Image (cartoon, rainbow, N blue to C red):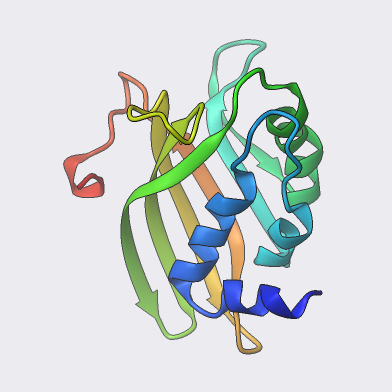
Amino acid sequence: MKKEYLEKVKTIDAIIQANYDCLGGEPGEPRNWELYKFLFHPEGKLIRHEKDFTDGVLRPQFLSPDDYINGIGNWIETKRKTGFYENEAHKVVDVFGNIAQVFSTYQSFHSKDDIEPYTRGINSFQLLYHKDRWWILSLFWQRETPEFPIPEKYLR
């Protein structure tokens, strides 16, 4: 663990921003997967809620951080023909004691210079404050579709 990583997990805003920063880059540009794994609790999960390519049914797909890196992460880093950048458009945070729920509306871009996102959705982070830092326990996301538009309260 690198000492500079500790600053990335001291606050809710910092850990959410670090998540987005780890994913962004141009095709072939290495991502900081070491930091990405550091954001997650050892039992942490990523859950994408998207249509299965085989039958078109909307269902959750459960991943460990390593599963994500070896699958989706590898694809965005090495196989995409365009860059991949994601940022937060809006955030709603609820905290009780050492737990937090964050709805982070994301926007995805092919380039740092793009003005309009090619897709957007909501990342639902469940966070735990433990041992002087925040941990991502789960990151659950769903892309916006015509069937599921993002509600106004999760937009600016």
